[in-house]
Amino acid sequence: MTGLAVGDALGAAVEFQPQGTFEPVTDYRAGGPHGLAPGEWTDDTSMALALADSLAAAGWDLDDQAQRYVSWWQNGEYSVVARCFDIGNATRAALSHFMQHGDARRSGDTAEHASGNGSIMRLAPVPIRYYELFPDSVEELARLADESSLPTHASDQCRSACRYMAIVLAGLMHGLDRDEILAADWAPLLQLQRAAALHPAIAEVAAGSFRCRQPPDINGSGWVVKSLEAALWAFHKAESFEDAVLAAVNLGDDADTTGAVCGQFAGAYWAESRIPQRWRDSLARRDLIETALRGIAGST
Ligand SMILES: [Mg+2]
Image 1 (cartoon, helix red, strand yellow):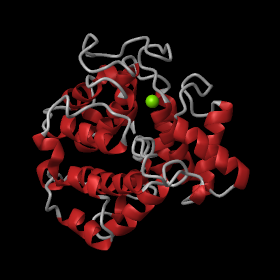
Image 2: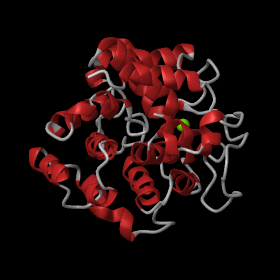
Image 3: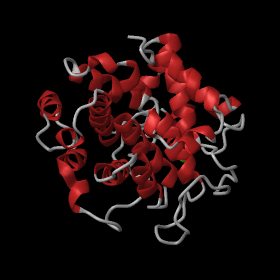
Image 4: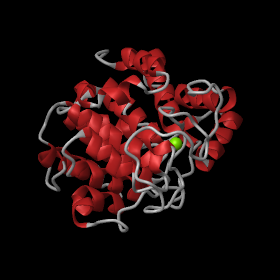
């Protein structure tokens, strides 16, 4: 959760700026399209906080998850500045559907073209809360991650990305070797594939596309496939949390979300104590993140 928020905050200042067109990010910076102060974070962290709160308060209840996303959108709950300033188009449309019919399972767009990175950016609370499902029940963990996508991002690509990312995060949190987890033949990945094949584009990422590509083929796209690939590209070869998230956000474009996704992997792997102290100390509204974490960590 902290890694997610730090990556989000680092990327926020350069969101929408093309790769190579800005002074590389090395620290929190003011500005960006939302005019934030250094250390302030965006929708990625807000939605993760909403999801964490839901898991703590309601257990597994997709309608409750969607309702809390609506509270963020409509009332600015879970926002760093008490108003929603950056909701994605797919999320807005899906939550509008939810407000009409109240069924989160059919709120998100299932179309392939609606495959943004809005559900992987907020995923961390699921493998944190259901930490103990790894390694014996990886299919169940993947199923919950898949469902967590439905309220806003119901395409097969988005759901597959959540399934894969959840088991990787769980493996990292359990202290397994990074190269083992990210290998194409990692046993839990093969188990997921046998249970229900990942979308081919996500399967290609899981098979290691991030190892053989380089920018500009690796980029900070808002498309879930390229977003996941970029985050893993930045994470898999990094020597520190700092290296990983800075490589991710300096891809530009959807920099806050690439940072948030990479920050989840890096935070799960290196743990909170290895996130630079200055970034933890000056993260805005750290109290919200710590309260959310208390609600879901160690609660199974
Ligand atoms: Mg954002």
